[in-house]
Structures are given as C-alpha cells and as structure tokens.
Image (cartoon, helix red, strand yellow):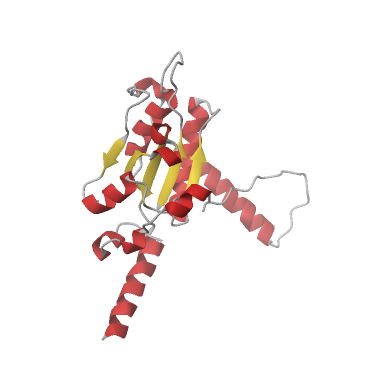
Length: 208
C-alpha cells in the first residue's frame, strides 16, 4: 500500500449491516502450466490436482463475455466515470467517490492493448471477488492527445457495467490518479457473505 493510502479513513466494515449483505471483507497470480512427456501414473499427486485446477481456470477465463471495442461508446478523456447499482446505499457510494475506503488491490492497464486490457480486467475482478477484495483501483489513463482519445478509459467504463460482481465505480480522487483511475466496489462471494452473517449472529448472541 502506498503512503497516500495511510490517509484513508473508512472501512466498509463500518457501513450499515444491511449493506454488509452485499459486500464482504489481495489478489494472487495464477500459476502457469509446464508440459512435458512423462509416463502416466495411477497416483493423483497434489501437483496433478493443481494443474487440473489451473486448466479449469483458464477455460473459465476463455469465456470472457465482455464486449469488444467495436461496440463501445467513447467518453471524454477528462470525464468522470460513475455508476451505482440499485440497492447500493447513498452513503456507501459517497464514501467510494471520496476515496475513503481502503484500496485492497490495484490493476494498472498502462501499455495494454484493448484486448489485453479486456482479459486483464476480467481476471482481476474475478480474482478480487474470489478473495473478498471489496474496494479496488483500476488505472487506465486519460488517453489525451491520442488518435483514439480515452480508448482504455471508455472500455473500462463499459466493461465494469457488464460484470455482476461490480456494485459501483467512480473516478478516483487526485491522490489516486484522478480521472485516469477508477475506484471499484466489488460484491463479496457467497462464502464470505456467510462468514459475515455468522459473525453478526455471534455478536448479537454475546450482547444478549
């Protein structure tokens, strides 16, 4: 975490309990496969299990349904990106917009082609969701002065709206990149949601 993140004052755990049902409490790289010619054995080792899991993950990522750049509407390089799904509390969205939540994971799309960014963003949000990352930062740049201004920024604005895991997003504060970056609020997965409910129930029983 950068020094500027020390100034963050809020945690999503401080939000109303009703919103805790939507979001939960970084992100690890995926392993690569190395193929070689070996004699097959009957024993299923931990290495074989991990390679199978990695292969399954790759198949899932190949089913990337994010739209291609050809159908994406351009935004102004200096425009503020903003999006809020129904059910996300106004106070929570305001705190996100003001950069008050801890940034738990970051994705930098500089030097990415559109297709590379499309894959990277898809994988990033999926990893954040699986690892209960609730607030993330995506840096895409503004693209001023380019032949196609704000190309990646326009794509990020479009793609994030397509992902069910994304509850809200907003252009970042100046210390986090301004309109060249975007805060993303991510829904927690079911297992994390269950853990949160159990903690709340346990806390209520103790108070009684």
